Length: 214
Image 1 (tube, one colour):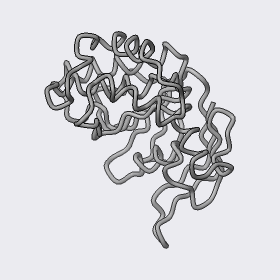
Image 2 (cartoon, one colour):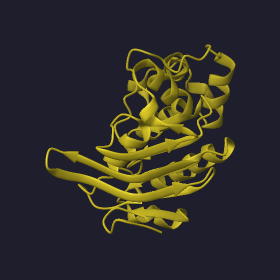
Image 3 (cartoon, helix red, strand yellow):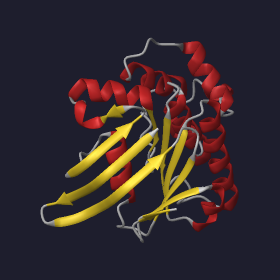
Image 4 (cartoon, helix red, strand yellow):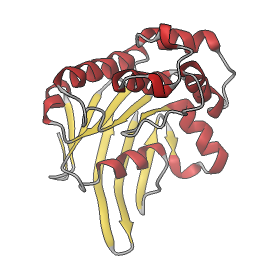
């Protein structure tokens, strides 16, 4: 589903990230672990095509990312990748429903209100369709972000530090939400986190602190 070979990302002479080899199959759950500054967010940005590697190749869902640029890369990202950022970046001026519909539009997909409503129902937010993000709790807002990430049926679902600011109960609910949504579409789930509370939920781990794949 994804293969990284000989990856380096440098900023000038500074090496920010090195991954010699990483391969993940469809439906697997992966944790990218490591302390702050170890390159977790950089790895996610490379997977989504938001950053280019200084050297090496990245193939996601059969697509070599080096072969995409500009609007083609944007459309591929919207249709293939579901991304839940650490800062949720919901559009404050749009309703919950319209935030999810926006993901369809940005991917170049037809607007499908029925699918958007069904996705919000699957994360327990049907009654919040017309609400503004500012009126939601943190947990509710995160559910909107997950719905937005999965509405296009991505083959790769990514989350950046999704439990970092949550208490134990909320963290468990968020992890369950991510895994359930990934299972619905047989998506590979990749979570970047230094949160030791969630490590038990992942059969596979890319440990950037040690530079090894387990």
